[in-house]
Image 1: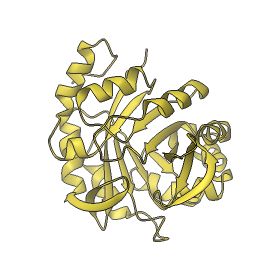
Image 2: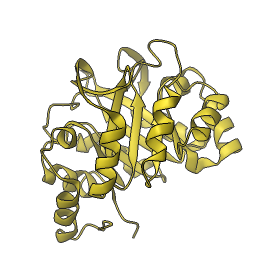
Image 3: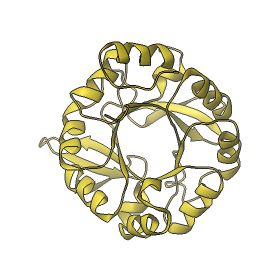
Image 4: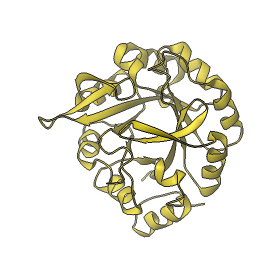
Length: 253
């Protein structure tokens, strides 16, 4: 069985790591390179870097920050934000990213997933989905940093993303973002059961047990978190030792 992954997420705005609640009320946390180096030393399996306002501001991700981050870590780096074309994939991979995350750009033009997978390989293409549960109990996909509803069903979009060539899916729960109440196990499990590619749970981690739940009940291949790590509320090494003690396959350092 493949080891489950613990993945810190750096949401970056204006060159600084930031964090909000339900994609709103953003506050500054610190320097992305310093945090990336810290998480690498603590035993993180991967790192995700999102330029969270790039799509909304109609610009590209900040390559200089990505390059500096990549030079200072020795774990896989996924980068997203303002990705719309195959050329954007090329720029980010050239800057040091190992994988590229596409969200709003894939919604506007799903064929970009297929084109990027054909050119760089499925393993480089991550479909990031911002998902929110509506009043009628359905999970819908949102775009532009959670600002706009697409009216697309989240489960169907995940299946389509895989069929187009995405090699991994990240489920960002808008409802759980920054509220420490645990991952949305229902939608994570639902998508994990219908796709054959790795699924990463994101949004809501508040304690170590939430990671265990996402990786077992939710069926996720990895769990992504931000605030909990940024504010030193949970050490990655200690978290991984706890998960291993529960019988969850995990890479220990």
